[in-house]
Amino acid sequence: MLRIKRALLSVSNKTGLVEFAKKLQSMDVEMISTGGTFKLLQKNGISLTKVSEVTQFPEMMDGRVKTLHPKIHGAILARRDKEEHLQELKKHNIIPIDMVVVNLYPFRETIQKPEVTLEEAVEQIDIGGPTLIRSSAKNFVGVAIVVNPENYPSIITELKENDQQIFLETRQKLAVEAFQHTMEYDNYIYNYLSNQFLDTSQKFPALLNLTFRKIQDLRYGENPHQEAAFYTELDIAEPSVANAKQIHGKQLSYNNIYDINAALELVKDFSEPAAAIIKHTNPCGFALGKNTQDAYKLAHATDPLSAFGSIVAFNQKVTKNTAEEIVKTFVEVVIAPEFENAAIDTLKTKENLRILITGLLSKPKPSWDWKKVVGGILVQYRDIKEIKIADLQYVTEKRPAPEQLDSLLFAWKVLKHVKSNAILLAKDKHTTGVGAGQMSRIDAVELAIKKAGEEARRSVLASDAFFPFRDSIDAAAKAGIVAIIEPGGSIRDQDVINGANELGLPIVFTGVRCFRH
Image (cartoon, rainbow, N blue to C red; front, side, top):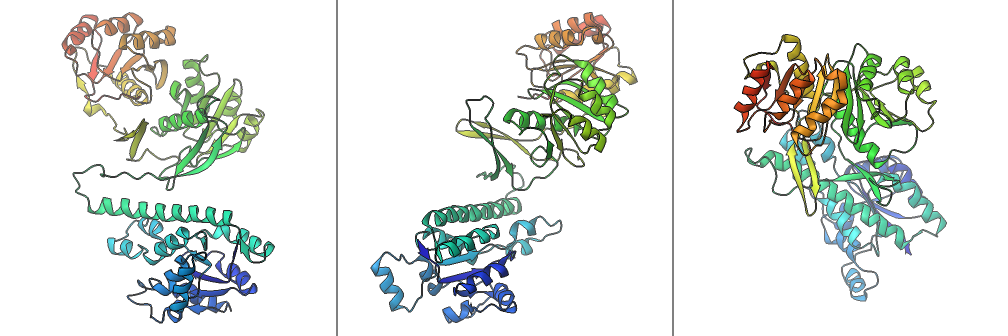
């Protein structure tokens, strides 16, 4: 165990510091401090020594140089179990430091300010702090490094209960936390300066650093034999499953979280009241309505059988009437920006139903999307491209009617949330059939038509990629489909167009594919 007799305190985040220092003072721990930390502690009646008195060298360059001195780092890095180290301390009149309490300049908070300048950001790049942290963490055998104010109470408790001593196991955990602290800090600096200095033609950095924080261990992964955990970004840019608040029900599972993400991504694309019903990341029903109840009923009608055990998401407040519709069947999760109190009471009658609140939803923001592969990671920009009427190419003799154009654009918007090969049928701003994840396009067409049943008639059809043959057009016409939207781009486009002209079926091209894997 390590007895704490001398401590260095130099922090940016001063939360809980005064109380912590008072407790150390009550144990007769000698304290050394710098700049603003020294002034705060001295003002609160705590006896301590300025670093400049220890080093016999003044702070300089607007505080850029304070602790970078052998009398500080020698006192931290010296191994207490090595006689030659102890002799060098004695020779240079250096007294060992047993505890270092440091956290870093607020670089992360600074760069998040809308109008921050490069100069302001650079001034928040800490030099002395990371050096103190790394020196202390390296010598965890002889030094306790404290970077997180949340640890102050437990450290004081351990000192009080163990005659001012800290266990090696505690020092090891503190060292790991310290290196995590500097790693996150350096990542923010690297990412910020990369964005500032890299050639704008270089869309992706040569070195990609992704940092996530674990928020919970999960019961298991996709399957019960797989262990799993949930990590979130340090700065979450928009409402999501990662920052939603759960107010009822069992702990979320791995598959719940993945499906919730798919559900939210879909409803965030729309401003009108929307309801999405998701199974295995695919929508088995989606609709817009006059209100959330209307939207949910239309979405559920798409495929009531598949909706059993689903994830349900809304983009507006859930009312009591909507909740009464939801509890008529088994649902795993309901997530929405907010709920009426009466709606929550109704949903809570289902003991295990997970209820999550996101707060006000916003349109998806431009950001990266990535997928892990063995030995690497694929990075791309998120697909947030919108197709408007002006973007469409009218390629057949017959043009869609105005109301059909609205349905085609609605279907396309929903389609990009369906796994490829994907076909989606819709009418009047609700889905009627979904053919997801098929290996051939004709199979996806036939599955969507089968799911829609009689509702296929008068529906429009959206395809996430071109039709390689006209067989899908023939199947669509036979089912009563009234218009088709697809990217185009096949070497057999003209065969498809000729078939549509023969059948009197209008087709529009988007010129954009929307694969989803």
